[in-house]
Amino acid sequence: MMMTIYFLVWPVLSALILLLLIVNLVRDWSNARKTGEAMI
Image 1 (cartoon, rainbow, N blue to C red):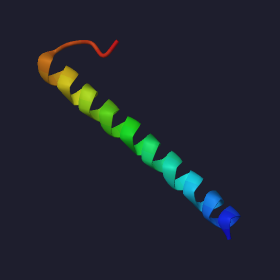
Image 2 (spheres, one colour):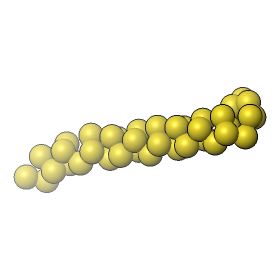
Image 3 (cartoon, rainbow, N blue to C red):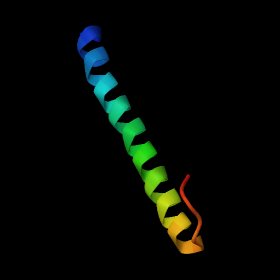
Image 4 (cartoon, rainbow, N blue to C red):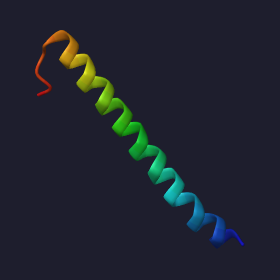
């Protein structure tokens, strides 16, 4: 039972972290476009 929960939790955590990174990237990109700054 615990192994099943363990194997189900990791993909969810990975997806949440990936989603957080993508949201922050899009936010930074749109903010840079508004202010005219370069991303790098």
